[in-house]
Amino acid sequence: MTPNEIRSATYARLNVAAVTDLLSTQYRRSAIFWGRAPQATDSGSDAMFPYITISAPSNVGFNTKDNTGNNVILQIDIWSRAQDGALERLAEIASDRLDRAQWAITGFIAAEVEAMDFMDDPDGRTRRCMIRVRVISLP
Image 1 (cartoon, rainbow, N blue to C red):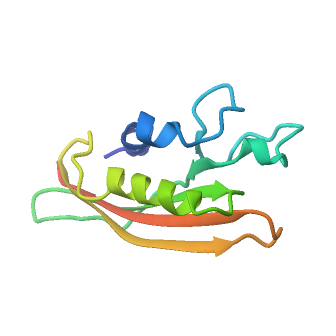
Image 2: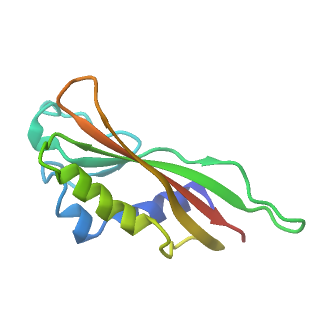
């Protein structure tokens, strides 16, 4: 799987109404970003939250005697300023979309959420859920 394939497949798994309806509507597109969220003059505003960022994947390989496969770890971060359990609900929905689902990747074998951690940001206002997903493929 190429980096573009994993990016497209991850975005496709998350860019559904069950997830996007819970994200900020302040961006000119879906509030799911590859890398970092765009910086806007009002990016510190609570209205810019929640949003999702997808980090570049790491790949340790999943090779057989005859094929070179992929064993990719993705980090998906959900950023929120809500203090009412909304982050936890959004994280659960996102996790369900990623875990043990059929991804649109060449040679897809499996996708499994390995961890979901919640933490407070040092700014004292923002909370984050970090989801780590393992995606395995073998062309």
